[in-house]
Length: 244
Picture (cartoon, helix red, strand yellow):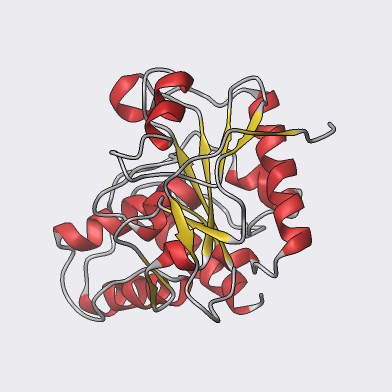
């Protein structure tokens, strides 16, 4: 499809920090009942939130903030040792009511437009595959978007992000509970980019991060549990990250 970007500027923007590269793409869902409500909020100066782009369900793409400017989309966030991610990322809001208002599958036209938009961004900025993430990846204690229905695997096949190949699904049986195995879980999450403590039991903080990982890379089992299948997928993603 031919990507056409329409302009709808938001006042919620400012200068990026000097010398900071644009090396991340953060994908969101709007999490509001309508596209209009979401766009209005992203352009409301009182709300003080924005994104660079909004992609509607019919594939319409709106640019709210120019890429060289900072938009306010990630909030308190962390990825691969970095914080203040608004300064180095491009934020894309994908229209979907989200888990609060009736989460649903993303239409094909919307996914195609979002993928084409990401590819266009990648043609302008050196964003490594490991840095194309969801809002839930960078803020797992607060966010769930774009969620387990987003086609991360299909995007990776088309050159946007990464997806491990050849990993058998070992199911959700065989929970990982011993200290050594949980240490492996925490280490793999850290290598991928999440902020986790190096040691500890399966506590609520670790479960939140595991759910974020599962929404992105194991959507068939968003449990927050460190089962054998999740550990296998974790190790595969960590290996893939090391190769990028």
